[in-house]
Image (cartoon, rainbow, N blue to C red; front, top):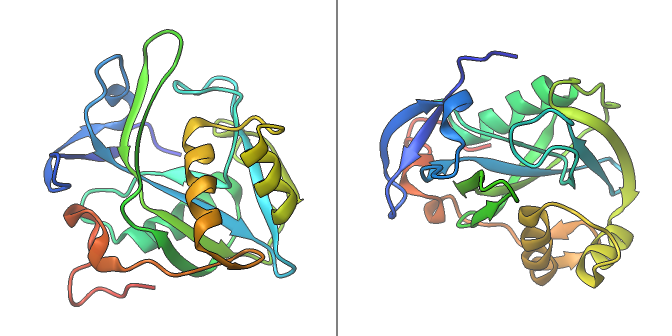
Length: 201
């Protein structure tokens, strides 16, 4: 894991307007930047959920979706999801699919530090057991997607602000258990859209 990771800063239309170091970007005035979330399923349809490391700068110890991350400047966002699966959880991802291209959120901790992201949401599949990076993930577990979805929506399961919002939207797109209507890459923020010559996954 690197401490010099750069994130892409965005304007309100989702265009790149610069970069900043990940270690310095989060504050009480966090600028809008590009990120992604991913919901990783196994071949039987179980969802991998993770608890954020206890010393993370934002929302430490909170249970959430499988993984989150930031594309590096110029990096294909689908490739960034695959990279992050290896870095954060030690897993290989296949069938990476875009489901919520225009997801955006802002979440504020009690101390005022906030997340402020355009954060497209993906699903993916793995047949690999996770080996979490301790600086990123405190714990991980497999759960049945219908149980997770229903518990999150009812408030019985506490999760991150963004995960709650994402699961609410994913439930509307669900066509079968753990299967969702695909999103369009054309609806991504402009800074996240693959170049014509880039593979879209």
